Image 1 (tube, rainbow over the protein chains, first blue to last red):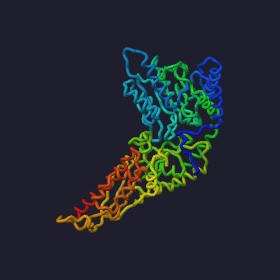
Image 2: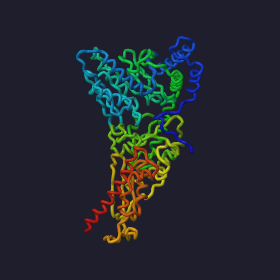
Image 3: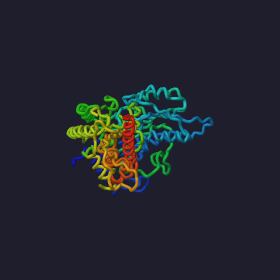
Image 4: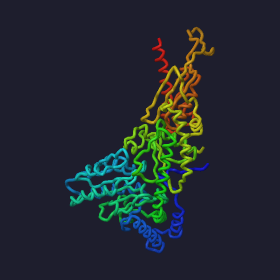
Length: 400
Length: 148
């Protein structure tokens, strides 16, 4: 059976160039980068070279690159690291530090914030996105208080692909910080879904911290980066050795890091393919709307990542659609509660104002550079049949 | 199918070829259960027939009914996940042709077992199917009352 993968936001296949770049660091240059002997130095040079490549990509200094085990760890380090650093400064009149984030962040951000709230270590404001899935910059401005020390807003939403105004938010924070002598607000963005398609120059973005995860763009699972601008008051969360400039203890995953640097090196060239991907995405969306009645696109059409198609299908449920797609060889994901294991459907879809029903009946397709028009045509064709069949079964269809 | 598959072969069979899907016009009893907010809704339609009671049930010196109500036909419409569709299909198959007493004896566990097991998070789908049948039978009795 021909399998069609349309779940690139979940993960991506490892690129051949990554395997080739990694290989020498598995059996030959396998040393621990912290060792001073030849083996260690070989590994260390691979690490240093990777750091330089990624720093060049983000337009920052190599000492501002922290290697982590992926997006979730980077997000945790960003949030907990700022709070921990604040808690370290024993001020007699201690006010809980305040975090501003959004309602539709990835759970790595949300659950971390909730955890800090539960433990009485921080107070958090969750900004609601508008119905198009965009965070209003003014809302952030209004939410900032004297005790705010961190703003964390994701760059591209992982479910609906909407792109947030990161530079504008940075501008607002910059203005706020002008009035502050101490107690600077730091700005973090979870850029895990943005790396392949959006502006990644951290100076242009104006962020203090930025998370990326290799397995979303052709690298290995289990490795990522947190960019930490010089002057950011961050305290490590994983303690032990002095690796990563004392920000993140633990022997570095050298081979995977080298692989990640390799694929990042190839990325600039790929940005040129952004336009053709947008065309393909729009074709996919338009075909679905054309062929299948009672559907709606979730999230802004224009301010959207080139790879994201998120559609609600009325009168039917997401998991049954996914199951049917899987039987046809097509891989996608859904905002339905049944697929998340909780009672509530996607918090992202609810936060942009979708009804529970529409959230349950949603499917996310994310395309990649290997996706072809033929695969999309096949998928839309199958979808049409699947939706028809499930609607015939449903008590809500117009026919019924 | 390996043990790591989400659903058993039987569940997939009922998902791809669900039994008794549809409506019954002028149904004798209709039961709607679940909540679109939860992503699970089942609507059960019953056609109730009357038939003579089987001789085997006759007990000496007892005042008996000579006829009984039974589920002559049953149809279901489902909005829900794979387990919901399969459970509603299997349940209707298991109660079709039974009298009410026997139909109500079929438990959600019976259905889950007949399906070769359901993942723990999906057991509630079989519970919903049972509730649907109960509601439809209730509706039948309610309708009878109003007819009188």
